[in-house]
Length: 117
Image 1 (cartoon, rainbow, N blue to C red):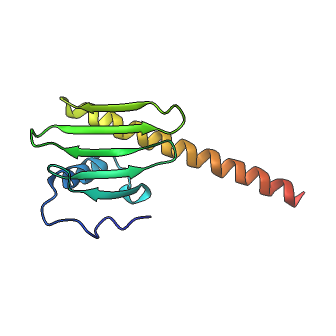
Image 2: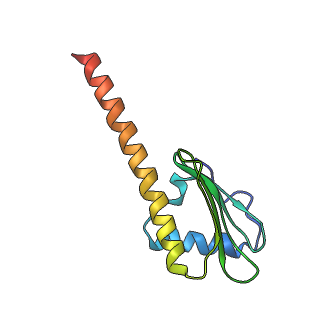
């Protein structure tokens, strides 16, 4: 995982806000492959098993989300006018990440169980 405290500029309001949101949602941001970015007022660039992209705070105090979904190649590229939408997007991305990790864990467990038989 990435050490997210390295390379953060002194003032990265977007990243700091995202870190607070992750804490409120009880999501461990260190489990995401992510790094802070300095685009506009700052934010986060990430890569997950099912999606990759960036979330950053625009100069207008609105969050911009740009996500590409790995399987469908679909793109979500929007400036959010409601903070609740950002919470939902982050929860959805985390749920997708957990589902992938759980599926991988189950597959490995089944394969190693077969070898023991």
